[in-house]
Amino acid sequence: MLRKTGKSTYILENTPSITGYYSTVGSKEGKGPLGSCFDTVEDDSHFGMETWEQAESEMLRRTVEGAIKSSGLDKSAVSCIFSGDLINQCLCTNYGLRDIKIPFLGIYGACSTMAEGLLLASVFCESSNENFAAATCSHFSTAERQFRLPLSYGGQRTPSAQWTCTASGAAVISPKGAPPYISSVTIGEITDLGIKDASNMGAAMAPAAAMTIKSYLESTNSSPDQFDVIVTGDLGLVGSKLLYELLEKDGIDITRNHKDCGSMIFDIEKQDVHAGGSGCGCSASVLCAYFLPRVKSGEIKDMLFIATGALMSPAASQQGETIPAIAHLIRISNNV
Image 1 (cartoon, rainbow, N blue to C red):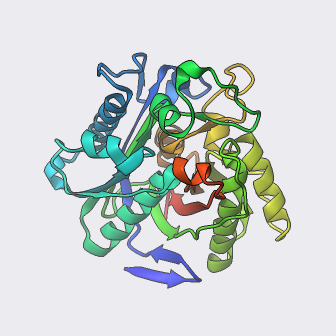
Image 2: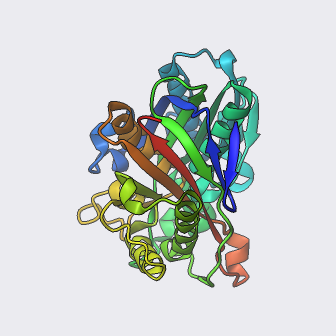
């Protein structure tokens, strides 16, 4: 049963479980600090396919199948999968899941897609007592082709730019069983503080993360210190610093227990990724590979996962538009 509190926070009183999860990354991500955590590190960036888009689709397919296998369920037991990606018309998701034979709802939240998918899957599970899945993916080369310049152009990156991860994460949500549990969610609100630089997505997304975190804490009468970790999705170094400054204005300090997936997935000093990682698959893979196993084991008792997305398009950027952003929140716990 859902119980609303505040403007957009919902308490899931039946606390669905995350019964299966899986992560896949490319070779660059596999050489980062979390390399040993991922279920699959694929050295072939084409994933055995002919094009980058086909590679991303194949990566997603493998990841979704891995998550379902991890849950112990048959595909036929999954009522619906919520999934999307960065590419126009969610191309990679549509082609990646077309043969998987599970009812499908395509979603788009840019880099916030995993949180949006988990939010929808958990709410549907709470309401129907059935199994649902959430997944997303991104690929460095597909994103470069769509959002920036051909790789062969050799354009220079600004210090605030982030590196789109070749990565995918998927999770299965089931009626209450073993931990990790999803106990509450907050739906984000589109935020736009006028950032126009497409190479500074961290600055564009930080206000959305701040708004969602503040909204959740106020709605649930919580404080940051109640959580072992507060995880954001790919704000990177620039966005994380700005997030601290924005929350500090409201008297909220998360510096003690904040982690950012974009700052974690690469060795920023050694791997030349400038401000960190980004892309739908960044926070999805780090959540499934690093955080969920630690919640399951009890090492992490209670955490907030806030994936952030820059809702831009190449056309809007070329027209001089600002970059709106959004952040959705999931509370994940070891016990209820």
